[in-house]
Image (cartoon, rainbow, N blue to C red; front, top):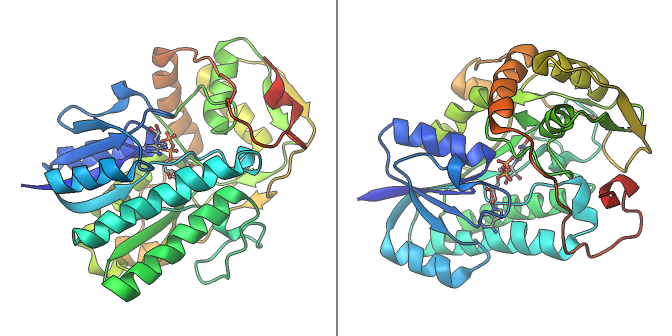
Length: 331
Ligand SMILES: NC(=O)c1ccc[n+]([C@@H]2O[C@H](COP(=O)([O-])OP(=O)(O)OC[C@H]3O[C@@H](n4cnc5c(N)ncnc54)[C@H](O)[C@@H]3O)[C@@H](O)[C@H]2O)c1
């Protein structure tokens, strides 16, 4: 029997892709260390192995025990802003962990390695970002993503490993971790509203992002392995319409049916405008669904209220405290 391995399948995007694959009657193994995901997100029918991609011995055993045809690699810590302050952890988890997986993919002749990179690879290049721009990541998270992209390319050239790289952006929806103060602005806002707190906004809130509903991109990420035209290519993936963080805050309040004030904080070091061009993926998959922000947030709000308030603990091993935004130090 052949399996699809979904790393990070207890997390947000991974759980959606794992469920989609199971619904399509594929055999799925979820590998997740539960550092940022939840066991209850793992869809029924998946084999769950609790462990980290950093543990190369575990990976060797896993690939020896199961015949793995496709890898969907979502397991990472995606806290872009925090990555400046957890540099070693970021590179170990997100880069070395990915390389461990690429090693096994080469040894066991996996048919295709699907990697979720990020538009963080573009850094502050002018939007709309296009795949043929020379990447200029501005933080360790983006640097690690770019390094994995480059490693996949050389793994193909040397060993023939096929891969598909997606650079999704600002994805939101059901199963997103609501309790991580360092990332997922939509989840943070919903969690703050449920607690009766103000919505924390870095800077003037005029930075823009194109928020992407998970249901619109899941089928593309799952099905790309069956489209040869995707192999060895990089694709931006997500919504076209951008919103400011301030506009987002208002939309989230409407979807939740809860009002509160915005609490403006000192601007942090982040790219101000980030959105991408999606014409390349549309050549292969055509126009894909584009759930409106209001509609997507409504669906997520129903789930968030059912899930309830999540406590947002501090990251335990901050490596550098210089320039750390003060809000991240609050209890
Ligand atoms: N959400 C977005 O907007 C977005 C945008 C671009 C790229 N991505 C990428 O997509 C992937 C999934 O992101 P997400 O938003 O679903 O985050 P998430 O935190 O919900 O999911 C990641 C999952 O990976 C697991 N994980 C972390 N480190 C691991 C390790 N070393 N070994 C095994 N499992 C590990 C976590 O426990 C979690 O369940 C990540 O690689 C992220 O960088 C996400």
